[in-house]
View 1 (cartoon, rainbow, N blue to C red):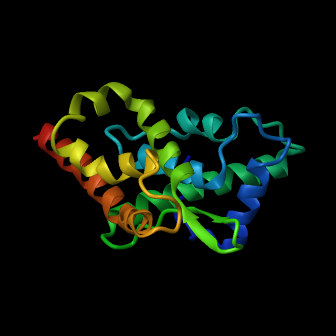
View 2: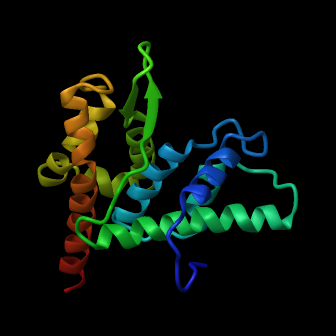
Length: 188
């Protein structure tokens, strides 16, 4: 069900997917784009290779499409996003989380990783037992920046928050490598 060759999603593609996720066509529990990106990052980097049917319904929360064209388009965007995440995690320095930007009381725009981190932990629940079993020691240390952001370490825009957000790409790639190394060791 994965496309043979995936073209990177453009800003227009991301905005289209985000608008659909916020539309009445999706259920009340549909994820925002940032949350879906975190969720799919955990799904792509975790202990098992999951089939799209295991995560698509959770991203959209049982969508009601207007027609077959809309269904095909939105599902294709979600599949491409997942594939793009998988591909970028394999290439050191290529992964970039899709984070939210919020406007504070003074009108300044601040980076906010809370939805992405919430999505990541939701994605971990797809393979809860494996994450929990390995969640002591090294893996827990790798996940520390995500834990800190989830607990709202610093507020959006302050130095600690920005530092933790800046470390998310390396964190996600390290977790991906952790599971792939474990997978390789188990196979031999």
